[in-house]
Length: 365
Image (cartoon, rainbow, N blue to C red; front, side):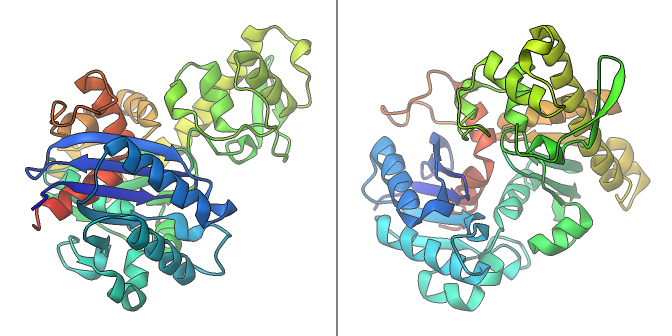
C-alpha cells in the first residue's frame, strides 16, 4: 500500500502540489504555471509536469481549488465540476476533494461522486485548509497569505480558525479575502495617486504594469516566483519593468534615471503595505480576549510573505514564517529539486494550501 499523499491546489494562474510521506513529512513541492482561463488543457499539461517531477504512479490525492473562478467557466459550480473531473482522470490512486466548512473541524473530504452535492464547500476553500494546518501549530495569531493575486487573512484563536464567511463574496465583504498580490495585481488597483519627484500625480487607469514590476525593482521578488506574463508581454528585466512603471504616470523611462523609477516602485510598495496593514489591524482588534490581542503574532505565507514580515516589524508584533512550521523529509525522494531545506521550506510557504490539504488528508488515513 502506497502511503504517499499529494496535495493539489488548483488555481487560475498556477497549479501547486506537495508530496508528503505517510508520516506527513514534506518530500517535494512544486508550482507550475497554469493559465486555466485558456482551457482545461492547461491544467492537464500542468498535472503532467507535476507527476513527471514527483515520479509517482499511485498516491492519495487531496485536492483544493480556486480555479473555478476563471472566466472559462459559466459559473463556479461548472468550474468545480470540470476541475474535479480532470483531477480524477489524470491522477493515479484515490482522489479526494477538500470540502472546507462542510465539517465542524474543517477537515472533510468527498469523492468525485459527491462533488455535485457539495460543490459550494469545495469552491475556493484552500485558505481554510491552510488555516486549519496553522492552527495546529499556533495558539493565537493572524495568518496572512499574500499570493500572486490575492491575500488571505485568517484569525487563529485558541488553536482554531475564526472564520467570517466562507464564500469569496462573504470573505471580500469582511476583508478576509483582499484582491491584492505581489505578481499579477495591476498597479492601477494599488494606488490612484502616487508621489513622484515630490509631487502627487494620478495613476493611469490602464493595464500598463503589475505589482511584479514593483517587486523586481525593489528586488523583493525572486525569479522563481515570477511566473506570470508581463502587462505588455515583454521581458522582465529591470529596465523593462521601469519602462512599464513609468507609463503608469504618463512618462517614458528615459525621462528620469533608473534610481527614480526604483524610488517610485518603493512608493507603490508602501501603498500596498499600508492597505494590508490596515486590514491586519482591523482583524487583530476582533480577537475576543484582550490577552489574545496582546499575544498575537503574524504568520506570513505565500510569495509575498516578505510584506507580512515587514508589516509585523512596523506594528511591533512577533512574526512567524509559516515555512518554519513545516516538517520535511528532504532525503525521502531522490528526485527532489531543492538543494537544501530552507529553499524547500520557502516553496512550501508559497504552496501552503497544497501542503496543508495533503497534511489534513494524511492525518485522516
